[in-house]
Image 1 (cartoon, rainbow, N blue to C red):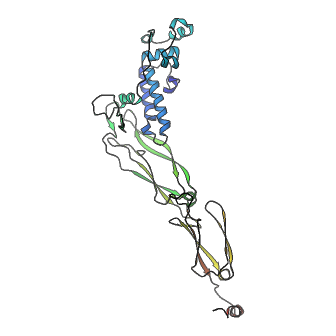
Image 2 (tube, rainbow, N blue to C red):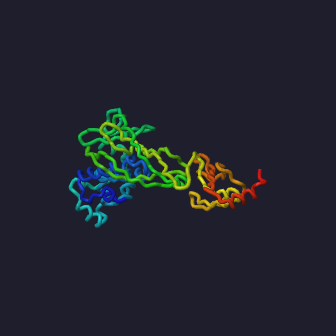
Length: 337
């Protein structure tokens, strides 16, 4: 690894430069501040901590600068006089680095211990740098340079709810929505900042209006309390054709009296874009309902299963009939009881 590049400092960086770089990057990449991409944040946080551990230690930094990461971690490196290139590299180091290493064993410091030195710890032992281990839980607060703490009291800010409108098609098929949020956070020096983040919200097929998706502690930070949870609450946009009733889909279909008596073929487009053909061969009475199994909304707890499609019919009667039409109807239907 290029430790200088990880901390974004040059090779002549002073101790103060290293501390400032570590504080800034640790605040950005601490896993407790990156709940969505926690695995990536943990890896990045460990790299930042390792880079600071090496470059802030004069002996480790000297060996790394002269011989590289492999020699640093293995403890095997040639005498400094055996390589002219190493000797030339050695000449630019500050005086306090100019001690030829004779024997060395690399003992990396724990990332949480380094973090605790800068921002404090929730340890009750009184030690200034230990972290909770063996099943313990790291605190969710950040301490400023003057010792004030944010979110360390055990109290938590009230959750913030945001309505998330979704189309019926999105709730039918499922979708990942990208949401930009803006929230207030405190940096390592207690300065209030407004930051923007992109959250990915995974909506599963069949989820209903009122379903809540929680992002723990992704709301605003306030002095003395843990950051609020951010909760997205699903809402359902009205659809031009379908209406949801639980796991069923309902459609109101108007047909003429002639179609109700003689038959009709319905052609519907489903929420996932399929063409659904439904032949009507029997006489349809006003207010009748036809049920098409497994063409409703997906049932989240029963993968592969769906509710029903219910078609409710409204028979449209003619507003008037001529004498000839009435005569023909009597002739055709007269014998029908």
